[in-house]
Image (cartoon, rainbow, N blue to C red):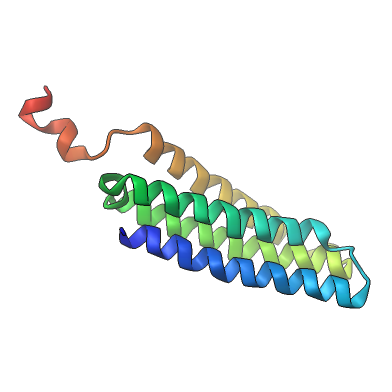
Length: 134
């Protein structure tokens, strides 16, 4: 399995554990005010990261490109900034962290654009420039 696939899958499992912990915290406390943050942790962290990992596993030539690791780093940086701030904003009513949520969201959006670039580009720069493909 390509390195970036392994990283995405391992990170997805971490987000899954955090998502379950947030869900348990809400269930135990009876306060479900942070359910949108719980959903974001599970969908962006667990599900989407696993899908990215699967895509790169199925496309190893694209997984070997530098942009794949940039995508991984940028995406998880955005999640690490956005998701705790979103949870604090929704769980504690701390609206002062809303700009942090916005910054994290913009970083996640940039990472998704990097992934779109990977998906719509050729498998590798070398194959696109090789004499056999001209």
